[in-house]
Structures are given as structure tokens and as C-alpha cells.
Amino acid sequence: MALGGIASGVELMGDCVLIKGLRVPTCIGVHAWEREIRQELVLDIKLEWNNRLPAASDNVRDCLDYTAVSDWIMHYLAQSQAQLIETVAEQIAIGLLHQFGVAEVSLTVKKPGAVPQADWVGVELTRTQADL
Ligand SMILES: Nc1nc2c(c(=O)[nH]1)N=C([C@H](O)[C@@H](O)CO)CN2
Image (cartoon, rainbow, N blue to C red; front, side, top):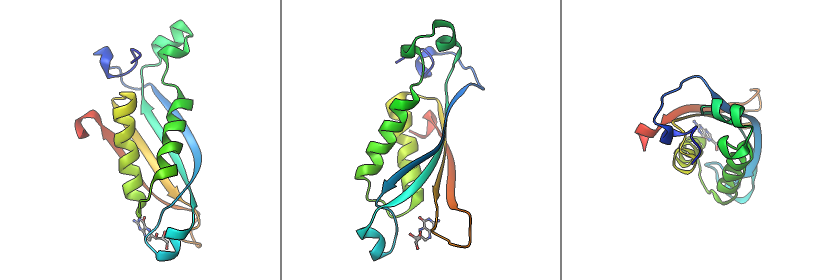
């Protein structure tokens, strides 16, 4: 793990890596018809990470690679069979804490079109290593 994660032993708040508007098709929903189709979820992710080291080294090995994080989420959602977006949000947050060693992850999961009269509906949560 790069030094930006929890292994650094240094608590440096404020820095983060952001992924906004990640659109991923998945099986999601409580109704029978929803189990037969794939619907798009839109995710915003905020991952606490000390960006000072990668900024100094200019080496991708020191950063929290947003491509790797996005790939992990897309792979997870490709096989997910969850009914509730709450379940998806919780499992992705816990998975990212495990997989990438980040100290804290905040996540918004939006389900566009679920309520046609709304711009979007969704859930938001923050989880830390203490939640593992
Ligand atoms: N808080 C939630 N409410 C609802 C969810 C959900 O995942 N979380 N899901 C549904 C249905 O699947 C809906 O999106 C389709 O009719 C309803 N309420």
C-alpha cells in the first residue's frame, strides 16, 4: 500500500481523491420487473488520501489510483443483485475501505428516474476503518 493510506500512521485530514458521476448499469430494485433488467446508478465517491506524497514524487504508485477505484466499483456492480441502493452504498463503502486501505470513504448513490418527478433520488453515507 502506498503511504497515503492508513499504513502511513500519520493522520493528515483534508486531502482526498474524488470521482464524480460514475455511471454504472446494475441489477437493482425491489420490484419483480426490476430483477429482469439493468438500471444505471450514478455514484459520487470521496476517498480520504494524503496527496502530498504523490504530488512530491509524481509517481502513480504513491497515489490512490481513481481508475483502479472506478474499475473495482464497476466490477462489483456488474455482479451485484442488491434490491436497495442502501445495500449497494454500504457494500461498496466497506469494500473500498478493505481494498484500498483508505481511512474514510463518503459515497452518494443516485438512482435517476426512480421517481420521475424528481431530478434524482439517492442515499449518502460515510464509513471509516472503525466500521470494519
Ligand atoms: N430508500 C429506498 N427507497 C426505495 C428503494 C431503495 O432502494 N431505497 N427502491 C425502490 C424501488 O426499487 C424503486 O426504485 C422502483 O420503483 C423504492 N424505494
